[in-house]
Image (tube, rainbow, N blue to C red; front, side, top):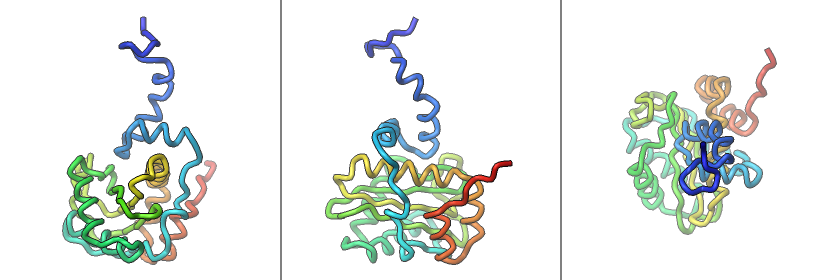
Length: 196
């Protein structure tokens, strides 16, 4: 018989959350992200990324090169130095790859001095190796930078990005678009699922 007092057994509230935790784990998120999502509204993608943060035909030759390119664009969108951003992304990748599988990666980092959440989305011309969980190279990357004090907002944003990039029809359309405006529209207003 399971104990529900938290002294070695699995409390009932954890059992009911198991399915959602599995979904978040697919994107490399922890149960902390689950709690953040349950504590409030998800962070909207249009609050994170702007048109200038969309790279529709990025050329990168490696994971490191890709992170450098993303850091360069993020530096243009923030008041932070490109090297500071790159180092934070690299440090996070050393903890474990943010390549979530199916050709998708969600690199992210927290940065002191950043005033708001900032996203950069890239569609790569050619996939690059990213040490993803399924071993596939990535061709769609949504980088998220957060203030060091962002806490739950950072986790809500990661959860929302992950949820969007798990929608097969959205991913297919992102891969088929090579214009920043079209990609931006897909990111902020993904198509509704058809009732079939």
